[in-house]
Amino acid sequence: MPFDHMSVAKAEAAHARRIEQLEAHVETTDAAREAQRKFVGGVPVAAGLALLCNLIRATHRTIKFAVEPRPKTEWVEGTSLISEVWAYFPGDQYCPVRLGWGDYSVNTTTGKKYCVYSRHIKNEKYGDDKSQYHMALADSADRAVKNFKKYLRPYTPGEIALMSMHEFQQKLHAPAYTASSAYNEAYSAVTKHGSFHNEMRSLVLNNHQFNDPVFGGLVKDMLAKLDEQLAKQYEAHHGYYVQVREYLGEQVFDVIVVLDVKKATGRSVGTHRTYKSEELAEVDENLPSRLATLSMLENGAFVEGLGHKVSETSYWVLK
Image 1: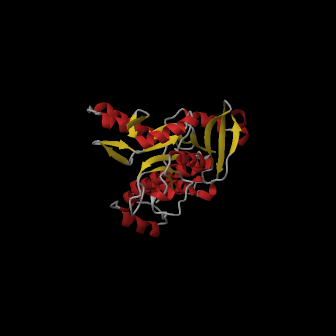
Image 2 (image 1 turned 135 degrees about the horizontal axis):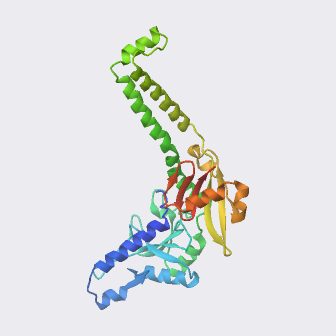
Image 3 (image 1 turned 180 degrees about the vertical axis):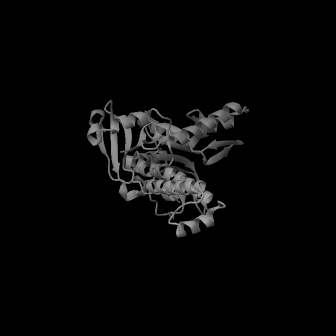
């Protein structure tokens, strides 16, 4: 099963929805239920998960938790409690680790265990078609904390570039698709015209002299749109993937050069180099101004000839 890369934005949105649901739901409680119910980020979770989160927060003060959108749950005294949360830090775009508490066995019940879910884990006890393949399971919370520290690795600029590249490629291809649609309409207008066959015969017999000037205009329009389609289809777009972050109190930029982005694959995305703000112009004199323009747009915005804003800290900038 492919690893479930979870963006911080998606996880926080799921967490906010859960809190809204709780605020809209009035319930009665009793002592037995309250003894089992603990809270993480304002959301009631299973006691085992709360214990693990609290132990991790004791050594990682700035860590944040958000519920998994499709979480594992456990029933306690008639109440469903969440058993899985994503962990991340301020500034992260993707959550590096998911934490859980529950029975993750496949064929037989082995009891509840603490779970750390990470893209860096390859648990050979399970096939790679199982979600457990990316899990490190532990009987104790202390062991789970050690697993958390071992596999807590933030996403690199290269990893994020690869995950956002497909969407950017689609946006780069869009003008060619639009031009292709326009050409097809123009072509259809020519071939469905009542003078088509007679004019084609005239092209051969009269050395391209159009008898119907309206039809001749349609042909010229069709050919112009065909030229535009081909130009956009084969146009190469070179650019940069840029990730913005804070380092020692200063804003820095991780930059990856990607040639011919529309045709790029994983092998096309190399390692990043880090630059200070005043050094960006050394990469490309237009990079600072283009990046500044993109930063003023909404997340997900694409401007032909300029680039694509993936998020507040992640950009694709065209040369």
